[in-house]
Image (cartoon, rainbow, N blue to C red; front, side):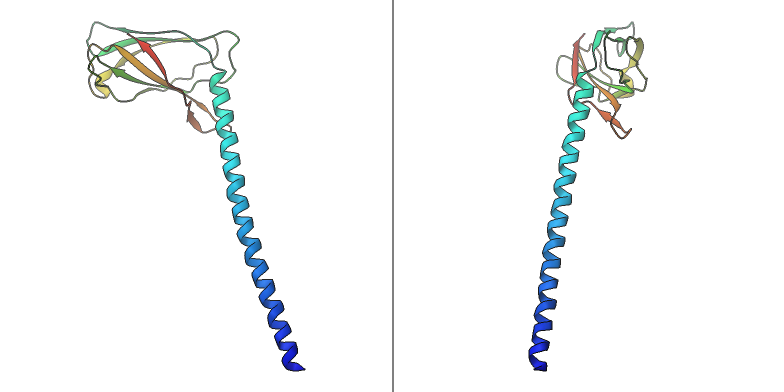
Length: 156
């Protein structure tokens, strides 16, 4: 009789162990799925915030110095209340060479217009640029600086 009881206890312990491992494994997978869903929701929220920003009167004009450009950047009326925290430019010449990213850390509120002078010698010197691509950065739902997924471009 004692031998039968020992076997029963061992079987119960093995069953608890198996169900415990399976349950833990499913919990871990559930957490991964939950994290993936949350990451997707955060990306959608960021994209929507970026789409709600209206840019206007964006222009890039060469200055008297060949590697320096004057930039005007404005926000539209009826725009999102989200501030732009940073703008990153990349200047291209006609053969496709680029300056590399050049950042302007400036908070740009709705309805504001800003002007900057950017010298491409901060990166790779680009003279006679024909195009400037730029990305805007805003704060995500957690307050971290995040780049909007869609870049912009302006002809020079």
